[in-house]
Length: 143
Image (cartoon, rainbow, N blue to C red; front, side):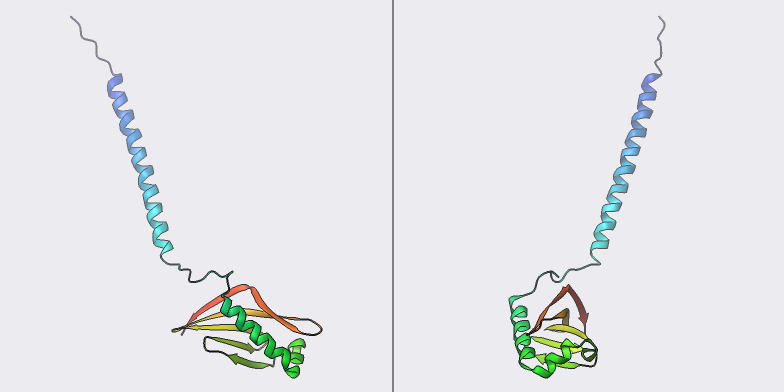
């Protein structure tokens, strides 16, 4: 009796090994990419939502706005763009500080050793000055 060999069984085994190797390679690349993304994400931290201002910050801005609108000389300097560049003004509270230096207006919040700077802008109306956040940009500086 003659036994006929089939060569397809060996070929199927080789095909299966190649497919398994490719799957392992793709899985390995995916895992490395995921680990790399996790390591990169540990470099960045988000302390605060930049589009959010506390109620206490908004109340402090209202107090500063009232103080500025009471002082006619300061109000005139803020309305004039050239004079605001020379203006130095500071108003402080327990937690907050309002600062105008070289034409830039900042709300400074002190937390432990951190100081959070939020840039503000003044809108000049005929009868009063309104102070609002400037696109809610925040600058977190360590001291």
